[in-house]
Image (cartoon, rainbow, N blue to C red; front, side, top):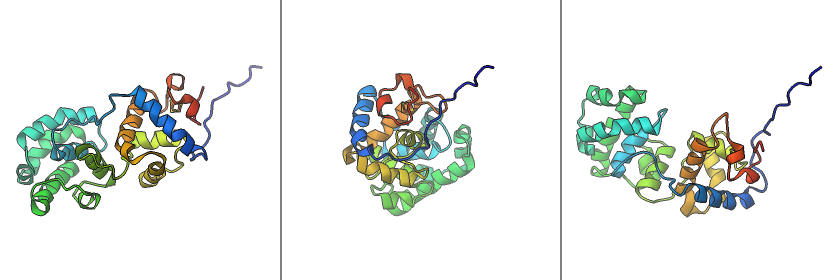
Length: 226
Ligand code: SF4
């Protein structure tokens, strides 16, 4: 009788004890592999990045980039967006999904910028995360990419998944993952780290079909299938 095929199984994700030793080399190799790693949301200002990041919830960056030129042409400033009619914004952003909620967030965010911040995007985590539609993840994106401030690490689905596979965290909660990652990497690399993990998650460590044989950190990864 033919023996049943052996399935490769990964161990349950957890933060391994040698994570602090592996982390610098993981960072160095990903840096070398993705010298072009950067924010994929197209923007020319902190305000545009804030709008694009709100739109990127449950949506691909490529789809957001198709919509934002029309949105920014129609509403180039927080003042203009604060006065927008919801139905007009909804028509522009519909294809990004959850368009009614996102419209409420966009107009509410713009109104808060005008009312509380003189029409400027604030530069602190505390001020950003109380804006409509903005949580810690979005605030980290803005601080890191618009202002070059490494206040925290942006944890999206790719960053969360790869951090677990790489044995850098055992958590599912983005805030707990962020706090596991922060002591492992120099502060000035926090923004870059997110981009590197996102690039690696899109190009090599693809969900459900990771290409471990082509992976530059395969020998450093406790989940490697090679
Ligand atoms: S070795 Fe495999 S599971 Fe680990 S990071 Fe690379 S592609 Fe992902």
